[in-house]
Image (cartoon, rainbow, N blue to C red; front, side, top):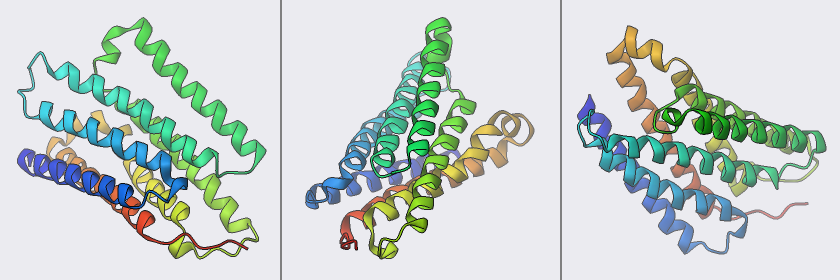
Length: 221
């Protein structure tokens, strides 16, 4: 199962690189600039994680892997929140997102400042909270789209496709992170299967980005 997870992780990296190439070919999609930046950050982060994942578990360099993941999480929620924030129109939705984002960032900074070990370790609950916040923000955007009077072809709207891809991945990853330790001690083999499935879902996220870049953005009325 470990080998299967590593293979899927490298295939996922290849998918992300392809997504980046497509984003370069479709540079006219200026509305997807935050997503292109997210793709670039994901390439760097996943390359680091995949390389260090090959090292022995007790290697002293494994800390670098966790630091990279923690920094990646901050950049991840920042870019995705920015993408959604500039598209969401509701005042209270904006306020809710800003408060949620500031609280999340504050928890990370304060926790890492007062306990250095946290910065060099994996905190699945924190990743679960991140997924929950991103999921809620996606629901804000989708709610506004469905309630609006705009004539939008959702099947070919880049913003909507990206949001659905983000919503799908982060919503299904929430249970994995919140039950991480329970699965690790009670059902380690099942946890590996869940991790594999989560990696596959992560890959579909970038496939949705590809589709968003390729699909023409319809005119709105």
